[in-house]
Image 1 (cartoon, rainbow, N blue to C red):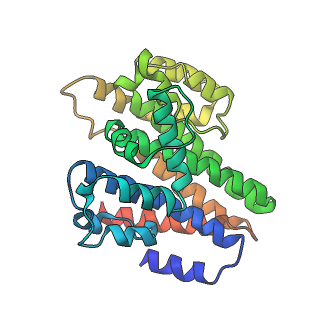
Image 2: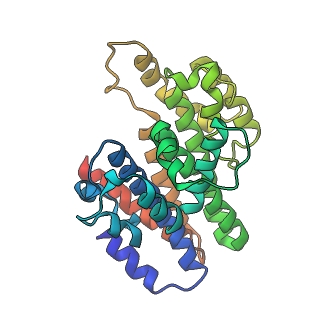
Length: 294
């Protein structure tokens, strides 16, 4: 229903609002593409995952992949062509694959060969891939709304700045008690931090060095709001670090961010004559759906 309403509203729009709504849909395209790749690596036919795909992130090429005749076992050639060439998020994938290939081979390349894609994707952690693509999408979206200027840049800029900060907190806290907090892997974790937001650049510079709860708290000291969030959830991560302790009685950072975001999206409707209400409307409807499912 949300997807139908979204398409109906988008059909009435003109530029630059049409592109703005395309940006909203791109986030769901990333989710869908990562799910298809995950299934392909697990030898699952894409048509088996059709029910799990987000309807807002469905694009023309996805319908080809969802057809019964599509053979994902034939390699990543068709997947590469559809995802990296025929979609609005192709540029994000292109940069991600080039970066992965550059890590493997420092020699600069003009581009990625189709035959290389399978090998690169197979070796990558899909959660890290999704986080990297979402980071690229956020930065692209932020640059777009800043170019628009006016109240849209003010309201949407604030929402995206907060999203960027929340993403930094999510990555940092979820990396605790994992290999991403070890010295050798810190660079992989830090690469997921967006290059804008209220924490950027001083806050993210300090957070790049953290590896445990104590150092996270010290880095967040100048940011009272985020420090308060961390103090509310640190029991969850302390319990997580102790094997055998139950974490279900504590709130995670995701729980608190959902609550903070709902308030932020509601406040977007207080301003007039800006595009941020479309973003806030979609996000609030998504939260309604989450509430029903839970």
